[in-house]
Length: 87
Length: 416
Image 1: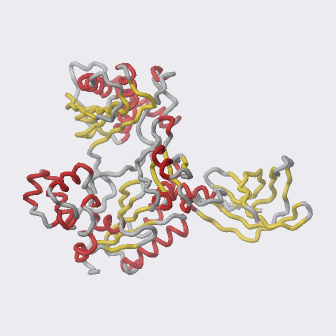
Image 2 (image 1 turned 180 degrees about the horizontal axis):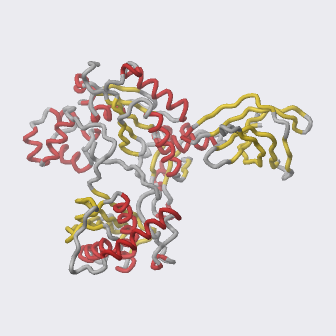
Image 3 (image 1 turned 120 degrees about the vertical axis):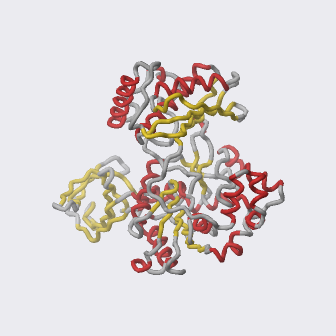
């Protein structure tokens, strides 16, 4: 996996307790095309607060261009922004 | 350690600004850890704030010092990576550190943005042996917050602070009273808290070079040479210090200063800069509900010559208008017409503002107070730029100078 750390557009659902689960997202590729990634399987979730900046980390798997891929997405609580961290 | 003795921790973040910047960048996808390369956090040279604020350990090997200009640092190390400061991130890191430490003791004193005292006395039944607890705290900070700290463990704040300054980074050190001779006395005298540049040269001229030399000098002689400060540093050199770990620190004075983006060459520009500083200082005074009894103005000219002038106010006040008028009067008395690089104002003798003295000569005190309150409320809600005085438009000066960010930022104090 390569570090990308790019902000993405996300559809997620939140439980009553405020726990988010990513559902599908759209990201821009280096060639300018945008791809939609859906049917996300969450393999692992973790919270971190490095530099006092809380983030939720999700290690996920989904089919991208017909191939199963592993990737990591991050949700930054302070800014409410979603990032694709590694793919 | 005996159970009836105080146990104080001093937690000191290693190369704070730089570590915090490095961790934040790594969290946001940076591939290089600033701590592993020659790097520094530096101010903006275009506004004449171009000095090194913090440097990495590899940069230290090039003999780069905090406070030196970026220009001279680049000469020493052309490959030095310099990043601008982001004070909001540092404040956030500092707050996260405090909230982690609050789990270990109710008695915590934030001494500056990157230094904290923690009173561990009687905490052993909860968290175990102090040294082991200090190691656990240090490791937790590294794992959870991503930066390293040094922890000094001792029986008072001074010794704990001295201990945390021993070998860095990521270490726990002890300095108990019986270790003073062995660990603290061989150090250079300028390493001692409260011994600054001026005191160091005075001590050197008397043949005092180490903390041990100072500790074994007759305190009467030191009082003769340095007045009450001599007694204080003699006590510190002998590890005598018993101030409590305090949450609410008594504010003795309050001031702001700033290097101007350009030299102020005429009275009008200098007065405008004073107004900008007064706006900041007066608002901070009102926020802590204090009035100032004494006002001082300091100036630094193009040749780095400094001088200051102060006066006692007829009536303690926190009015922007009165403080500004007084600052201008003081400035006019002291200024010889030379181009100015840096201006500062400071208030001391602070009184509670619950009561205030009415005066025959000030007719609009009530209206001024109402105006100041209204402006403060607007600025608190919509930001400091929401209401500014028109004289700052196109002046090249910020409407509220001084300080690093709008929020109250914990700066280092000279009182433990």
